[in-house]
Image 1: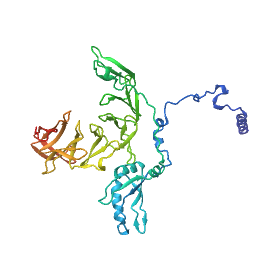
Image 2: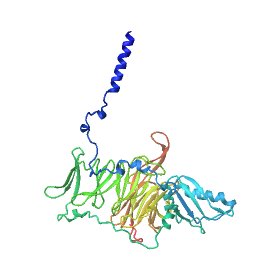
Image 3: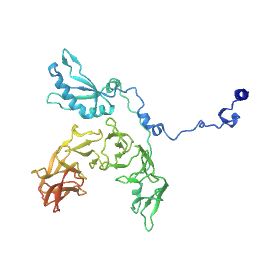
Image 4: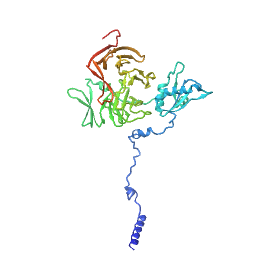
Length: 453
């Protein structure tokens, strides 16, 4: 009897729940429901690129797959007996730019037609292959012409009648060299204070410095001036911001998340940024070179972790930038940002190099190798003319210093009296240990070859 009464009570409670009026959203009246919609004229200050940058990179495109394919013309026409040899040569040349997933060699009457198609796993690899191998000379008879497959539609759709490009409206950035107009020629400098919360720009006036600008949370870590003093760079989680002019307005933004280091080219045409974020072989993102005036991304590179900063050294006129790689110096040229002459300068045991501050001349030194002495060389770019060379003995290290006008090159040579091969502190491998250190200076007169200093 007690069980029947309990069941009846449960049924009554369920029926009461079914007949009760529902309350939507937890509000009894519609007037109490708050509106979460933006006003009709609201403009979101955060762009989709800033909010969903990583996801937008993965968004499929109509050209996906096509941009991965390159067309190589000027290839030798060979029969079946030489197909395998030709394929091995092509793979050796083009596989260094990335993974090749497909190959197509058009054949007619058992003879290759003289061109071929290669598909890479990433369009970035394909673009790098085009930049580096277009004009590659296989031998005296064959020179490659390399293009992206997607470029053919661009070339076919070129109109017969030329139309002038649309003129972009001029954006007045003000006088970016306004600080040079100071009649007393006072310097400007930045100060970060209040535990990093505030940043101010001061003018070194007399008797007391003058505040030019003072802002809260202007940067998240530190600031950096450009070499000519035109720009002030501030660091943020999403990238770099450039400021300039008499009122220090924002000039440009460069999106590179978690950026840690930056470097300007001498003429302030380009900006190099580094971020420790992981990247892939197909899509390097560690080191990026930007066009400083337009904000365009010019090229990206892989980097060692941690990097030896700066990764690149620039020529005085921003025409070349170079970096040290094992047994070679890789020189790149602007504005193409391709490898100069499509190959690195092979120099065995090269340890360091330096650009002249006034000419496209590069100095470098080679370490000793058994009975071969160390050597300092001075090379002129682009004609590869060797201007100076000197053999050095008992050398532990060298440091090269250019006089600011480029008239002299001073090489500080660290020498030793005795050399031993000993295990390092961890006992893992043998290293050179130098004893009886001393040094001397080797000075080269760059304007007069006959003059010896």
